[in-house]
Length: 509
Image (cartoon, rainbow, N blue to C red; front, side, top):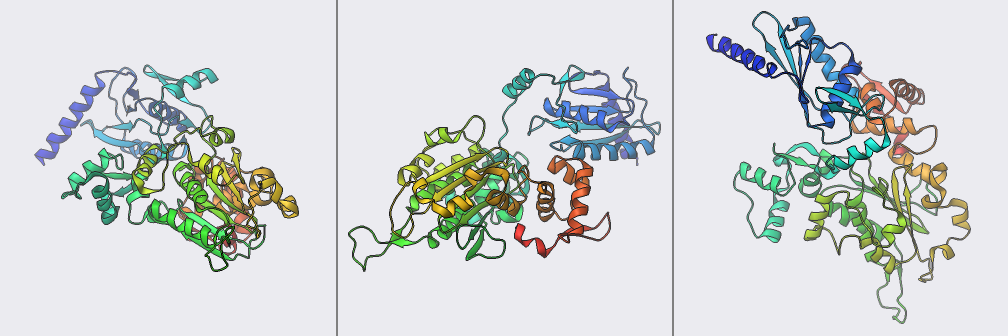
């Protein structure tokens, strides 16, 4: 009893010592907080800087007035709601209740330095710290300067919730022996340090996305959206009910690559080489190396901030590889065809170079694919947030012609993703398959809702609004419409219920 009382006194004294330092760019005092939007702005400003601490229950002059128990409960609930719903991207904050010894409490709110800058409030305003206060970015020039001085954060280094126990020990052991000539660490502590030094985990022992995709035993259990979904359709159009072959490829990155490549090769024609005898084995109508390069490009350079699968679509006249995310920064199709590159996922790229996937040099994959097979179209769809590679097949004569010469009537009727764009047809069908947000059409929010509900059946309407970047009213309209159509069903009550994506929507998956 005495020890607990002594600890409380010590906590209060430490708190008063920090308060005595006064307000600055990392400390802020609030006697009370009631306005969620104002609190969100303060969190955004801290996250866009180096993080900070807010003392709630402390007046501007530094006097610790404290809070009543009812206010403490209200404020902690308010903090949680604001951090998850009114700050974009949501931030992981921490609170501590420090007793003052007079029945009053100070709530200490810690906001970490953001790893996904810039952060902004629900109105799209970016706030920055300005001494002990804050200010908003008011010009494009200031925004450019902010991006220039903000450290870039890559999606493949984002931490997951999985620890080192998720590793495929045999896979990682073989990699260590092959690349570094060292044995698997004897202790969990040594393993955690090694993974951190290899940029595969953070300082708390959590695997990052690269660590999961490369060396987890079951990556699809941790990040189920990052797989390859492959379908072989009959003819030259996508249908909702007919297919010849279909398979999903999950697992570590090299395993996904091998499965997707095998799917393509088994669905290609084998043709007779010029001058070969009838008994000679056929060769693929499109060289295997073409798809090796394009699949590596899709797996390594896709945008892992987009929660969607890579699509592999095989038709009679073409093969399409649809990657989430448009080309980064100032890259264009012309630039990548010329061999220019911009590394989106540097950790993945560094490990691919260690012979995890076929790799022949940065920026040369697209160029090599075109050298092997010039009949490839590329589309960088910034509105739909997609990059599409379309490989035109040679046909039954085994010839090698330019794509424009082989499209014919079927192409004129159907078109490709690269030329029909986001106005409907094939592009809309592909987007609908994965609920990708950002494409044209009145059902984009419905597709987004379905996609998120498949990923997390317990998702709330507020979470959906944040994930989709739309208003809560828009989300509720989409939910009501989907339930009326029988495509979505609510099971259970508001607190413990979940969303059931109905079987009728199987065509969307």
